[in-house]
Amino acid sequence: MFESIAWAMGPAQQGGAQGGPQSAITSFLPLIIIFAIFYFLLIRPQQKKAKQHREMLAALKKGDKVVTTGGIYGVVDAVGEKTITVKIVENVKVKLGKAYIATIRSTSEED
Image (cartoon, rainbow, N blue to C red; front, side):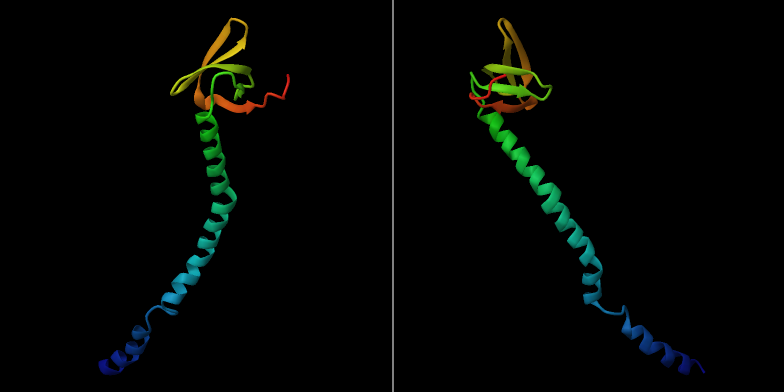
């Protein structure tokens, strides 16, 4: 009696997970595709923009016309390792963190 039950259960257990390793790959394929889309549409452009901003900050020098993230227009008076002094008007200088410089204006741009 128990022998027939054991034989009946044997082939079902040998099959194991249906599909094998190919099934695991196909189940993760949508997640891999979504990650690739996020990487190329969101992560990569953001990293590229951050790299350009770091390069711009490294190239700052005295006399550059800049715009801060707060919208203040000024001229670079002094550049330190982490700070920058910006001359806003005559006899008014403001010390800022380098990261708060948004853009360098070209000399052809006028206010």
